[in-house]
Amino acid sequence: MDFSKVLDMIHFPSFIETDDANLHMLTPESYLPSLKSLRDNLTKRGVTAFYRICREAIFAHDDPNRIEGIHEVYALSGATPVLDPYLTQMSLIHRDGKWLGAGLRSATSNTHWQLVKHPEPIKASPVPETALKETQI
Image 1 (cartoon, rainbow, N blue to C red):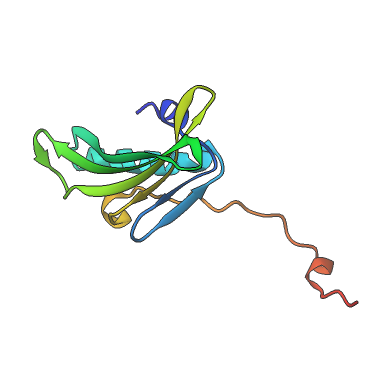
Image 2: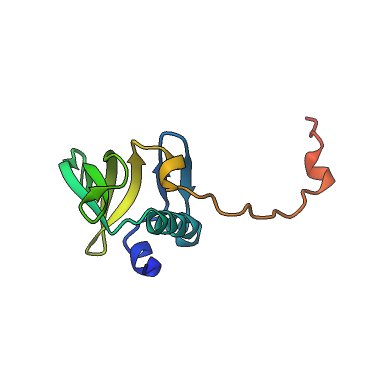
């Protein structure tokens, strides 16, 4: 539940992709709603353990500071699976002496896991009318 600690382990910009949702995050603040949503969903389902088992990891052929990996993810209540395990592809980037998550593709439904929760839209300032008119050359 220490969201700031989790956010310190992420390289921004970052992304989360599921079978039915995508979120591209430029800042830690834009990731926070998704972290809270996932945590709330795990709690509601009675999840007591969340495991990611690495199945394969390789250094990028052109960048020794990047690792691409495949993980199998388990969410358990005691020893009982809450949902079927699923695969996740994760990218890690080495920055300032730490390995940081730089993106996540999960082979699962966002509807089930609620991994992605888009933050409220930011209200933009109105576009001046002159900017909407075509310019003639």
